[in-house]
Length: 290
Length: 216
Image 1: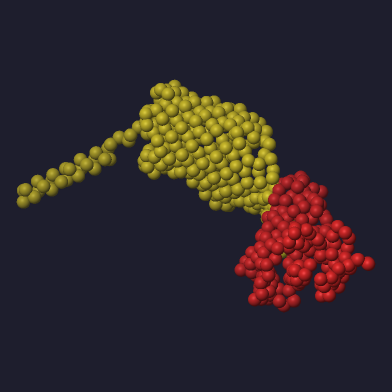
Image 2 (image 1 turned 30 degrees about the horizontal axis):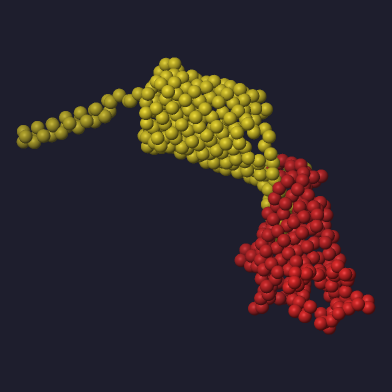
């Protein structure tokens, strides 16, 4: 009886030690700029396994040490406001990370639609614009020393935007397709575990001529798709130079930057011409990482 | 001439009875009319934007009517006509080309079908306002035309003028060419070559031009 009691006490003690040690273990240092904790945006680095990043602009989860899943919030918010589901998902893989060099490959798709109804010449007209965006990126990060890193990348964006209005007799419905290649570089200088200064330069060396497609309905049996060639003058050689900073505390992070040039929308890999944004290009996010 | 008169008669019969060229031209003309509606003063409205004097490609897809005229819906099983037209500064490029796949159609209750390639030429760039039926239109068709169980290999260059005259380009074994024409009533027919115009009768196997003539 006494021996059985001793065994039970031993098991209870072991269970207490094990569960206590799990529960009382302090969380690992997830944030602050450190050798292990690197910037995630515009770099080749991704979250570690089971790490989360929840921010204003992006939600991410570290599926494995080398694979991060993310979704951008802007398309969801815009989609909710317009009552259109706008799914988007990004997969980023840091497939190489040894010594001073890290390489990553990312792929993102975003899909959604915008619908509006208006009265045109006394007729009720429904307009819809549906978009499909594919973004593929290759990034390299080099740690020059403990304080300075450089990051270089290329992003190819393919878009397919469809829209039109109905009803009329020979209604033309349109689709615009544009592809673009973005090259960017970022210099990172860590002043302290909290503050990292960044200088980002983005350039758009290639933008395809847009092919605007219009669907011409003739009758029940016959239709035609018109592919119209349109040159995208505004975006060729678009660029931006953005000085910024990333502040990192135990969990909270702020990324902020304001610069000159065209506005590169990271969430969908697209560019807003400088003429529309008055040459102000910005970066901003607030997020927690845990 | 003896070896070609059968070919002329057969080509003429197939082309005129199947109405194949007419069907192709009708489809292109309907698209031309659609473009005319969509393009106003050289500006094409699409997707909320206006494209001035657009350059581009028009892919035309037409589902063939099939042999059952009572069918409620167009059915791709009846075959398709897939044509490509180019827009040059808001005008139609002179050449339209494409393929016809298993296209079934009914003419005078007879079941025709065609498989092959087609090229249509208008001679010059055409304004979208211009009715294509008013032009001299040249067709090059190459493929297999079927009527019920019968099958004909078609490899012809033919032209339809505004009045409905059909002209078939005939190439002889020695590569010389001449044009054999049929007026719409098919009673008046003949040869047009560099020496002039001959009135001919394939039935009587003779052609003549005033005092000049030949028979075979």
